[in-house]
Length: 108
Image (cartoon, rainbow, N blue to C red; front, side, top):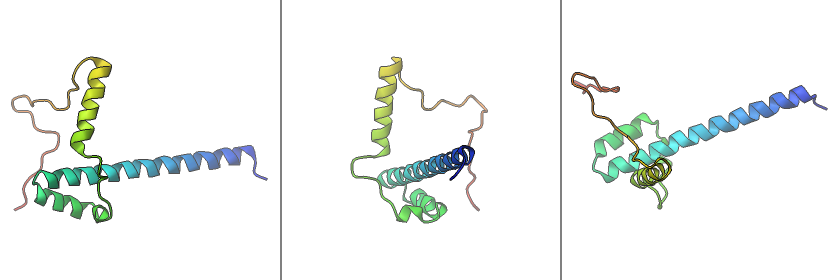
């Protein structure tokens, strides 16, 4: 018979493991959707690079037939506008001289 404190520790550990699994699945699903979006919009080299950098996980999954990033964004914009009565701000113009948060340099 386990004590209450051991049961609580076990339950907490299992909940943490389930949350980590859920977050990993979300990350994987996002990569799958990004990869699909890149390919559908002609960014084949970027998609190939993403597939390479993802360690092969994208060769094992495909986006579901009824979903893509454009649909998700459209649904989010509709929800946000309905809830807050204004359009969401998804991107902002950089100020003169301001560097992007993520700056990539081309190899070579």
